[in-house]
Amino acid sequence: MAPPDTRSQLLDAAERLFAEHGFQGASVRAITELAGANLAAVGYHFGSKAELLAAVVRRVVEPINAAQTAALDRLLARTPDPPVIELVEAFAGPLFDEMLAGDERGARTSRLIMRIIGDPPEEMRTWTGSAEDTVRDRYLAAFERALPGLSPEELWFRIRGILAVAAVDRVEVYNRRLPANVSPPAGEAARGWAITFLAAAMSAPPTGS
Image 1 (tube, rainbow, N blue to C red):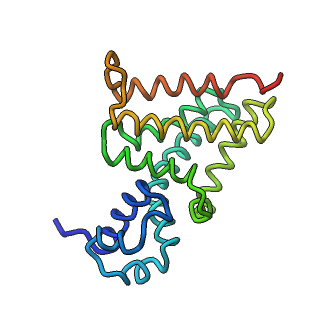
Image 2 (cartoon, rainbow, N blue to C red):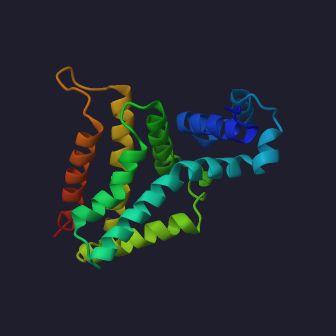
Image 3 (cartoon, rainbow, N blue to C red):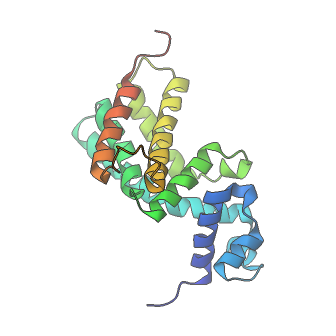
């Protein structure tokens, strides 16, 4: 098997360090040292640290987006107005499938998604492109039809909650921060529990009603 090329090594190192330390906490020097590359390699392969971040995040997010898109396509081919629980499974299921329980890579993906949600630097919020926007907008439209009583703001808050629950659960399972009488759940069990919980949360009446 051929050894990984410099670009792949930089992506792997940056994914690990961005997930652990955020955009500002992961220096170009630390990334290149971990990758075994020279300091100019980030500029040569990506142009800038911000573009490296964008490449890292897209590498992680694109398989999730592709699975979410395929799942939504299957639902809409059957009915123009899928029920909430099926929309939640189509949206959340790929998050669990791509972030395997007990897997270091899955936990790192989860930590990266948590950084994207919560890290303050502008670079963490401006990496998206048209493909990511399309997936977001299609799910928003489908959830809006299924939950017409929710304001756009509350609906978007709840969708962000799906991302947060999935990411936190995968990290917590990997770190094994569990009560003494609780065993680590199998992946399918946690996936099912999450979809049941999230569907109920999404279907709750509008706040204040």
